[in-house]
Length: 279
Image (cartoon, helix red, strand yellow):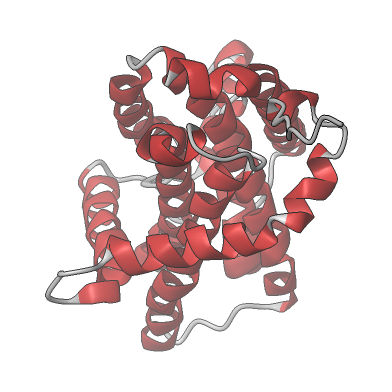
């Protein structure tokens, strides 16, 4: 009688998706480990979750003020920028961490079987925790500016979920590519740095969509950035009637978000069987 146990590659496991639930303990452990390690031996600890977006907010506010970016009537510039900085910080952090997660955990990939999808997913959840901590900035600024959000704030979790979908989809795709092509280790920071300037963080999308001098082709290319829809959605939820959403561009951004998620999962599962051999 043959009592050998054969460990098959995850991409061929018939119970792969149920294994995600079976190995949820590992998911919790990896997420909690990353939370502890991220700010270990730092003098201010988790306060970095507030300091980093605060510095980005200051820079984006200054750029918008310097170039005279239009601000909706009755809306403080600092609130308009903050409503965009928080989702962007979440996306850039989650995307960067997920992209490098497999290489950073290569010791796990070569030892035991578990659904490899758990590794990038756990890094995204850690960045989500950082988002909730840094959300304190927005609450304080609204209190200082005496600005109360309306009923639209209830839809904020929807746009946060879409940001998570974008980060997860793009992160899975690049993580799988990064295992074989380490060039992506250098490409990801460039994407993040370039993305902050082509996303409506320091300015409003109303300038792009409402400007008659900007060609329709440029507006279409601008809408191909899925974070445009997320940031516009955040501002709509927080700032209310002062912000309008360009529906064609918004629908395109949301559609691309789920396209990247499907593409990322498909390519990740396709390459998963070779991770241990290549890494």
